[in-house]
Image (cartoon, rainbow, N blue to C red):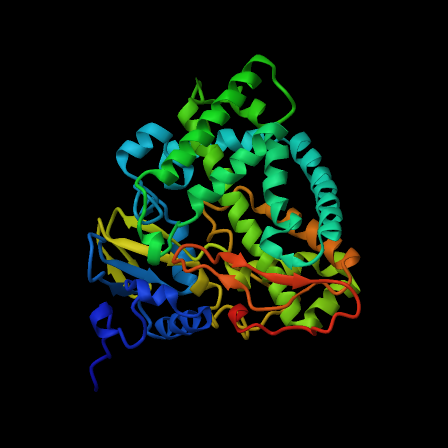
Length: 435
């Protein structure tokens, strides 16, 4: 009998497949990266990658749906602390700005998440849902007046920011400054910088966060004195284990909600327009009965585009997963972008099909305690905006491929030319970047 084939698990033996530790990999066209993930899934065990330069630790890539889901639901073994992104947040940054909820585990995470969840009261959520429709109508009104151009600079791209600001109760006079600081703080997250962008000014992103948190602290003080019917008021009156939330806790949550909630939903909306432009038969089906197909369309947009590509975890105890035994201290990467194309779970995974059912995508995480708190709101925003755009902007569609930003963290759209109106000479585009 032949000996069983040993699965290569070190990057030095699988560089012909892909080297996820090489920054050059993340500059490849998205279609090539997705093909590389498919080849990695075929290997049958998580692959270990070792960065060739710098101080980054080796990591194992979890690429199958089963492995990503299992790790997500074992936070006691696959911990979010000390950080889910690279580089991990420095201890001094946590001390100054507060620790983000995504980097917490156990009782600390559970207590803060419970307090925040309570702030999403039924009354607040009902008001938010009604407001989402009104915001969508107003932004499409503005888009109609503005005309075609770059979708990422158009009014609808502000949808998640406006909704979150309304939900939190951020006064109008603060919004322009906060929006600019969000863009600056998240501009290079996960990006391999090139050219002049390599000349990073130390602390510029942190300074933007600091200014934003100072603004938020001032608004929080106002709400403590004069509460309103908004989320800031609910949070400043809440407590964690009998203690009032500190300014750092509030600031860290605001940063997470504004940066993560805005950027991921904005990218999902943009990818949705790309996909509906590239697949006119799916668009026609959605338009034929929007209320019937809207939920499926949103889920399929999120699955197909996967706005967050990956999060990291640190192994805390010996554990067998996916044919490999992990040891304490090892790093793993949960590749949602790969898991959402796993052919063992999704039939014809590269196809865009708004009727796909079931659709157990991991676009909002793989379940467990870190499942996205804002998933419900993000879905409502996407449905409301596409309802308005498809009904009122005749023939809205992309006119060129999206300008994707090099990143190993999120599937970010930098620019997206679009048009609308009858009689436009450009027909539907099938951009390769959406595959």
